[in-house]
Image (cartoon, rainbow, N blue to C red; front, top):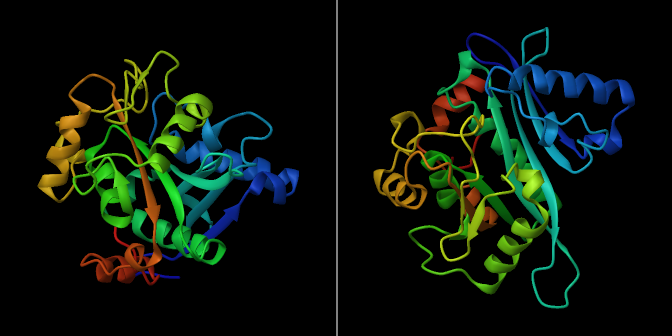
Length: 271
């Protein structure tokens, strides 16, 4: 896959901790941490960056590498969760959209579009009927993107109140998956707003200023909605729960043509 200035290759790694050789796992972990160190300060020991031996066992990772050197320039690392969606039912797969890192030279140039296009294409093959997803962020732009690409998203302007499924997923995150999402132990979960209050304490690499325009969504209405939930300088994070329905997720975006030309991959996903 090529662009005017460079060539890019994408790889989908589904539960790489269970499928790669020890040497390949070690190299992948090193590459992920090296790139993440350009994005996150200080570098957290969590998710795909964790030093735990099973850190990659429950991850779905898409990597983007540049040139003949295959240098890692971007990745998204999602997490498989197991949550019962109804009383008495067996656990279902829920995907936490997780962690995205892009090299400084490629930021704000649409690199996340092909990453998520590959992620969603893989998920569509594995879950043709769709699946429930979560996102956790202190960034209005990230929250607005999931509100656009998924259906039945709470909280969002289109969904006034959580359903029983929304609540079951959120309560499972609160009770069992705080570590997977780096939610501070002292954070309080506001079940009405789906906000973890104080989730990012001072000094956290994920703490952001919701007033900073770099983190806003292109739709001002979505930015204002999520800024209202987040507050400012409070370290709060919004937990979103929604459903990936492929007809909507693969809708055309006006930004896609330029992204396709630059990264040499067909993109039919809104982000």
